[in-house]
Length: 124
Image 1: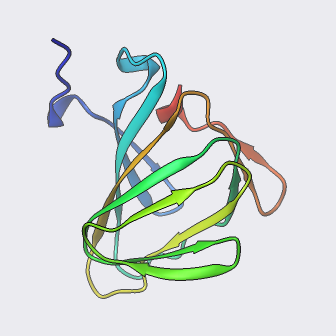
Image 2 (image 1 turned 180 degrees about the vertical axis):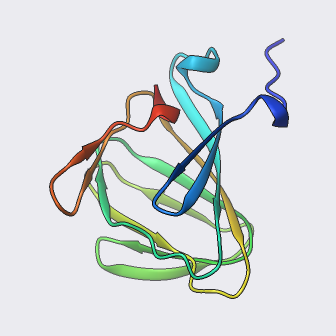
């Protein structure tokens, strides 16, 4: 049975956030990627457009998610479906840290506001 323990999650940092990769091709997944995102208080996000859909599940704290120009504050237990092609930004404007669980398909890429493309290692 493939079990990925907390200590086995691969840690990445980007745009002031920490990504703990649990499921990805590198860990044996063929179709899905999943990670825990940690965002420190006062951390602004970076707007990006996605090639595949993502699902955000808020675990702790609060995060402001802007999806195609509409902002909503997420609290624990709430979910956002981010469609492929949408522009998304995640900001922690709160006083405490926040975490969310993110799931997507293998191979997701993001186009940043400046036109550059990112192929996150936690989706490979």
